[in-house]
Length: 246
Image (cartoon, rainbow, N blue to C red; front, side, top):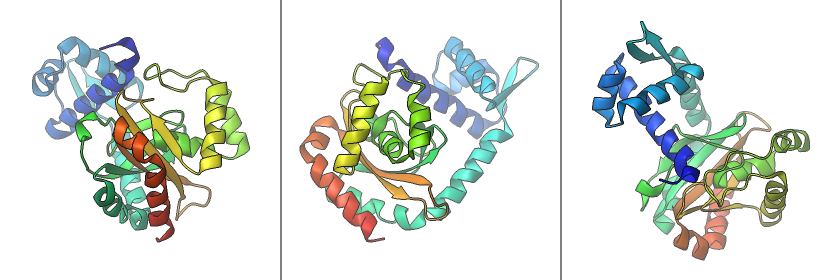
């Protein structure tokens, strides 16, 4: 795996560690490695990152468990799913139309978190799935949300560029992201072309949070880059039509 692809792989492995702890409860790093198939040295590194983020804790440095912070995040996700129920109802229609996976993501600070998906083809290649996050400068959902921020929030976010890339297609500089924001606003949708995962593309359109004015959500469709590139305008039109019908 190339260095540019490491953030995606690390995210997937960290989620596997979280899911393993959620299923089995407190475990030693060795047991996590056995249950997950992740090398023990990598498990230690991932647990260190989760501990630093406040998502995991150690007992006597021999056993790890998840913290209540994850419970709070899960409660927030469940609340969001209830609030966004009218939008989640359109995802099956979008997936049936194109055979691709559709997503509903919502903005949480500097990220978008996926709260619902309807699976289509090629899901093994997709990084985004319920509970996973992407930064605002990456992927169709994030870049659509970034373009929808008010001027002050957008400028504050861009002032922190350059950002860490997922691969050589990632938009990380202020100039690249400013140009993309203009494109998204002109066309009414974000078009992700392998900027998160090589071989994968996506189209995303922002929707208004029904419970919190000014809140941002995004309906997106992801799939193999050839299919997305050939159909991105029609994908955007169908998503827009479905959202308007809610």
